[in-house]
Length: 279
Image (cartoon, rainbow, N blue to C red; front, side, top):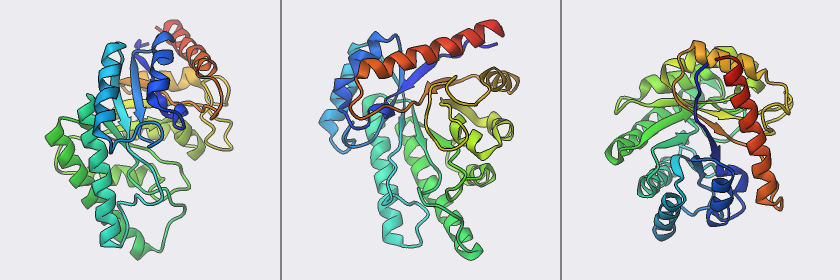
């Protein structure tokens, strides 16, 4: 089995400044990281802090592999309201520009809004068209910045939560080559892990690694939920995946960073053991 690099998402520390956790991440042996864009963690509107974060990561020999684009009820690139939609695109473009300033290589984006359910067909088609137009604008800016845009499969109860919706949007992006990110927790909750891996395989650049027990998106470390990790890694190998694994775990707001990283290290060891056994 391939010995894929295993990185770490700072999303579990979204309520804390990135400057307070980078050293603990580095001490835990991680080298590739995905940066969370939550303002309390790192305000991507503050260019001075963004530059400082990039410099600090380089000092610690950390590679900012990706930045997760912002998620908020106000960010809706599918909105029928022109003003709201254009403001949402501008917000995502700003995050992309900050990612480039920080030295990030990939930006991970949910292709739909954080809203539940599917609207009537006429509205759904309209929103799909708006999403395609918006994603083309974001993709064009990513190309200008030298960033790789990566679309992530969403939770099944959300708008565009079916992988077929995401694949349609992927095909509608004309400006540059756009990749995909498999979120294992989302795919498991959708009950279609194998299908999602298969459909994303030709575009797959990275995998968000997290576990759950089939009830909610709990972002448990691998081995603490119900996902069959030897099978998942085997499927990734069979699909010729050649990218980055990123642990995307839950962390309590007041939980010491050392305890969070201890769980991450155990998760990394479990995945590494599986890869060694299956080699």
